[in-house]
Length: 183
Image (cartoon, rainbow, N blue to C red; front, side, top):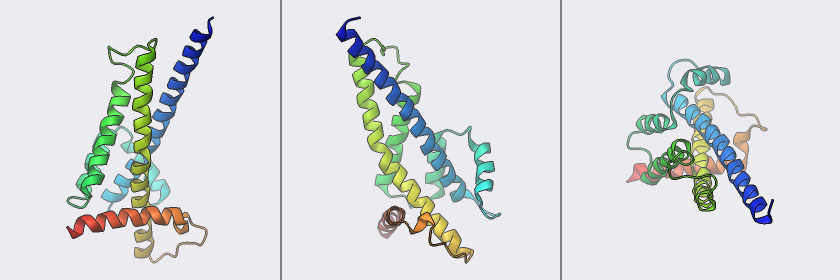
């Protein structure tokens, strides 16, 4: 086998490994979205991790698009425009990745150019992850702090909510909501 062929085979394997990692990260984000949605729409019984897990099992068949739509509906006129636009862009990218990127008629795993395009697309998707994850984790931290306050439960010193990074994510989420609601 030639050096050129070996290099191409390694590159193709790398792109496919990135695709697998992208899929795994998308699944994690969908789990976070699901938890946010369940919390946002929850009323009645107190929330526990076990309760969320049971509800999550029932919700797993929902798509990320439905989660985003329901999440935005749960906060009518409260999500900042930029946040909503980024969620929509992320959803569009996610859908293209899952449903079209590697299955489109024009895509060929034997084509270096097609692999480069797929790699570039996945790189862009990976650049979107931090914003989406930070907003969702900020929402979760904010909601958890509100629930603890409502139930008059003290948050233990070793709880992740005391972590400076978690607090920063929560503050970013709150500030974006305040800015939107002030306008």
